[in-house]
Image 1 (cartoon, rainbow, N blue to C red):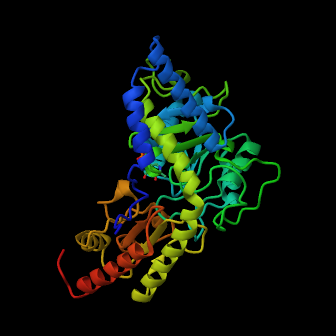
Image 2: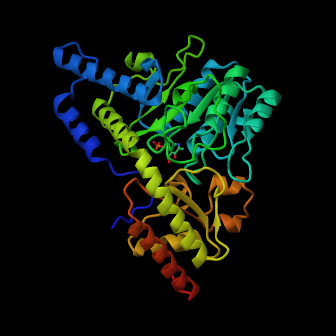
Length: 403
Ligand code: PLP
């Protein structure tokens, strides 16, 4: 039985990624910058991995990809780097539900020059609000995530990318939760769910993550190794973003010996995830919806965040009708289940869901938020067992059990 329901926090490494990592570690461990033959092979493999990743993201220029240690580094590096390249006084606009690695990095580097774009009652950023923010504040950059790590709500990044392009504003999309769960390229046809949101197809625009100026990704969210990710950057002379000095690696943008084995593992994991996501989406949406029905029946007053919005197929963000989230977590852990209180980075701090807060919840409600997020292989029995465990935990908590 699979009791791990915290895939939005991290995923186990896939078998394919592990084997690819091991082989790269054994055969191509040389420094890609060195000048002998073996190093040349490592460099070649590294550049092939960059090309493969660019193709997966729908990006024509592989040079736009800078490999990093993960999404937190990518997001921090972006805002730090922007303060050096944008004119003094430049403003940035971020959505109200961004991950702390966007929110806190933006605030740290831009201080009071950060505009917050609100979400609607479903936890979705409205394109009209982005347009209004651009008109009113003329931000140099807009940052809206692709899918919420907390509620799973899919954001309208394609339309926002177009709006930003027309306004001459840079668009950054933190796609750490989207990549590996949703298609990164192509139209909406061929994908079995109506999960593309209410957005109309944008005439003449190739719909891929490559259409965003800047994209953040992280390997461990889709079966790749931890400590590996990337940032897709604009390849433009006028945005000379760089992160680390000290060597010519990554086209002079991030110095330091590249972690080719992890990068190979990441790209293999994504190729695998992409090939499976249609089936995973179809099956897991059905299981997740059944779980939510069972939960609603067992817990009158339960609130399911972003229920009405198009959501990631693996995520369910619940506001329990009673008892604090840490009590639910403790009870479920004892039964072998791993779930979370909103976002991994904030679990331990009760009630810190940015999404539920943005929806106007009280502090007390915030303390009742739990998040369940599955992987591509969860069976209906796993979901039933999880609902059962909630029911048992609820009984114990209602009876006044400690812990
Ligand atoms: N951005 C989003 C949307 C995330 O969900 C996460 C992880 O939860 C991060 C950034 C940080 O990712 P990493 O662990 O790769 O630094």
